[in-house]
Length: 252
View 1 (cartoon, rainbow, N blue to C red):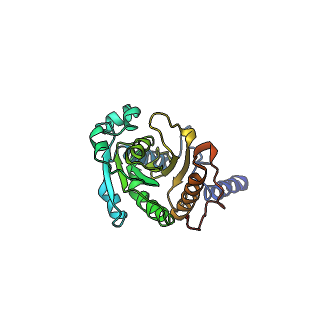
View 2: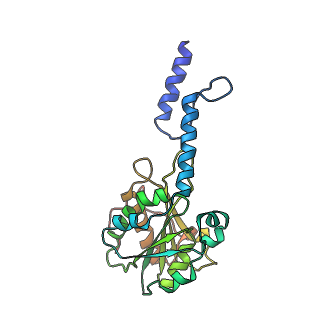
View 3: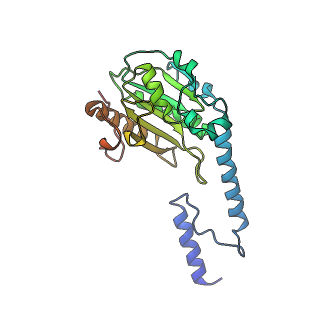
């Protein structure tokens, strides 16, 4: 093996330490080396499992350490329908809507399975706890656990409960390098059927230690929520002004 080839191998190895992207994998004939091919197949299987694994609300309840919760479903009756009909995942089941508590809440947190129940099971409760700990003086509604749900379902929930803003924690679409990534979507004054993605602020890739930490996510969310309440806007009209997302001050 030539010295140049060795140096190239060492270069790729050092670069792979800084990214989960599949770079410099080499080849065996016209295909990937066996090891990397097997790793790719394993990642694909993990992504499929994340999409199809059932949502287990009791896992979230246990992680919330006594915080009040309420459970709802979307208008999608099962997983297959949910995947085929995104519109149904954005609407509350009418029966469940009627059972939601109503109040003058500053914010409601909605934990939605989305496209990765695994991400929600592993990360959502910790993010809710870390964020609410910073919301001194805020009126926080019971945490809503939503099955077969997409981001826009939070608009329906917030309107039904009377909440001024909603934070939806949802399992993000699995990729070939991450099947456990959690997203957080903040919306002020949500209007079901009218609010668009341009009206939301999004934090993506919450999954320590490889992504955003719980405290980092909570700091960003609390900072954005404080500004949203002050300006009465989210989305393109609201910018993250935190220092690298590590907001440590409590939001009054």
